[in-house]
Image (cartoon, rainbow, N blue to C red; front, side, top):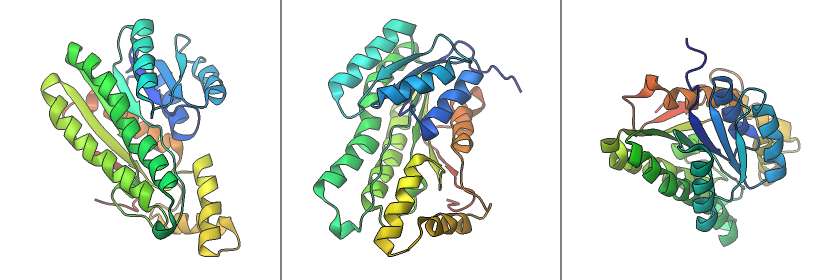
Length: 262
C-alpha cells in the first residue's frame, strides 16, 4: 500500500482537538496530508497541531464553533486563503449528554442538535461550493452507531445522528454530478474522554454503583470483544477519503465491532 496516499492533499477536520478527531488528523498527516484543524477548544487544538506537525509541518489550527455561521464562513475562507483548496472535509465535531427522554431539557436537545446535525450542515454548506468549483472532493461525516440503533438515555443524541445520515444521503445525491463523494462512518463504543463522561452519567441514571460496570457492558455487547479505539474509526474515514472509495457515496459504514450489522 502507498503510505503517502494523501501527499499534498488539504484535509479539513472539525472537532480535531481530541478523541476521534485527533486520531483522524494524525492518520491523514502520516500519509502526507496538509491538515486544517478546527475545534472550539483552541488550547487543546494547539496540542494536537504540535503532534500533527511531526508528520505535516504545513498544517494549521483554526478556532471553530461549528454552530455559528459567521465563524464557519470565516474559517473556511481562511483555509482557502492559506491552502487554496479543501480536498477532504471530515465533519467530526460532536457532543453528547445523557438523560431519560422525558427529563431532557430544551437546552440539552438544542445543544446536541446544534453541534451534531446543524454543525455538519453549516460546515458542508461553505466547503461544498469550493469542491463544486473543482468538480472533485470527499466529505466524510462522523455519525454514530446511535444513528442506526436508537440508544436509551441518548434519544436526543440518536435523533441528531439519525439526522446526520439523512443529510449524508441527500448531500451525496446532490453532489454526485460534481464528482464529490459524501459518506459517513458510524462508530460504536469508542474509548474516548466522551465515553469516560458517559459511563459516569449512565451509571448514575441507572443506579449502578461503579461506572466501570457500564463500560464492561459495552465490551460484552461487542462481538469482537473490545472497545472501539479512535484509530479504528480514523482508518475507515481515511479509506472513505481515498481513491479506493471512489465509487461509494451516500453510505454509512459501521465501525462497531459487530454490535450494529445493518
